[in-house]
Amino acid sequence: MSIQSVAKKIVKPVVGERGWQALRRLRGKTVRTRPTEPAPPKPTGVAAISDDLCKLAAHFKTDKWGAHKYAQHYQRYLQHLRGEEFNLLEIGIGGYNRPGEGGASLRMWKHFFPHAQIYGMDIQDKSFVDEDRITTFIGDQSDPESLLSVQKKIGKLDVIIDDGSHRSPHVITTFHTLFPLLSDGGIYVVEDTQSSYWPEWLGSEDLDSPDTSMGMLKRLTDGLNYEEFVDEDYEPTYYDRNIQAVHFFHNLVIIEKGVNAEGTNKRRALKSRYAGTP
Ligand SMILES: C[S@@+](CC[C@H](N)C(=O)[O-])C[C@H]1O[C@@H](n2cnc3c(N)ncnc32)[C@H](O)[C@@H]1O
Image 1 (cartoon, rainbow, N blue to C red):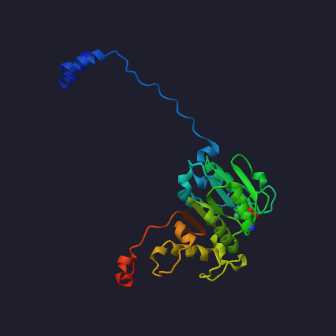
Image 2: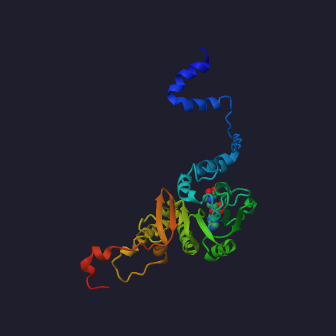
Image 3: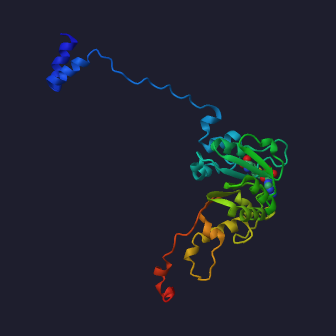
């Protein structure tokens, strides 16, 4: 028995006369398919790891991954900016006064953010790091004038990272000078907050000290809830009104800027306290 007659015996009862005739007409006709697109070439080298900050940090040898475990947190909180055009400023380019050393993290940011302008500021001259989309400035983060002059040259600041001297008074000065100039929706990061606990680094062993970087950062968390304060005379600060989240990690703090005005239910919850008040 031929294949055709076996097929007829099995298929025709299933598809019926009309279906069988249609199948016969199709027989011998080649089915047209779209020519397959050639697969895009697989990225190699640093391009192959450009979406993975931990790998990029290791590749460019910044201590943001390895000595510290920061890259994973940056990945989570900065991932949404990968396709965006924006300005990132990192204070502390690396290498201190060693000639030709530094720039690792700026190179990492450049590869993670293909459309961003990457700026670095350091108390030392790091101009050898300058290249397409990377610009460095000399500046001292303990001096507000120095910080403001760098900000003026850059313009809009969308991400600010403080990885400079790690001295609490400098961290506080930098935050008070630059945070108000950060874009709405921007991200402000303070690295190496462990130095806040070290008197030798101008920190303090007093966990409640108001003069340390961690003291300042911890106070921001109460500001998130300023609308719930019962003191009617409390005047919210700029930080109260413009911080939406403060994320604390081991030695790293990430702050999200944005209008903080969700409202409060305190008048309903504390009826007797507010009875008779507008
Ligand atoms: C830890 S390194 C930065 C590492 C770099 N961000 C990285 O991840 O690869 C700190 C840098 O801060 C710089 N620095 C120290 N004091 C500073 C200050 N007062 N103002 C600006 N930069 C400062 C140092 O010269 C040094 O290069």
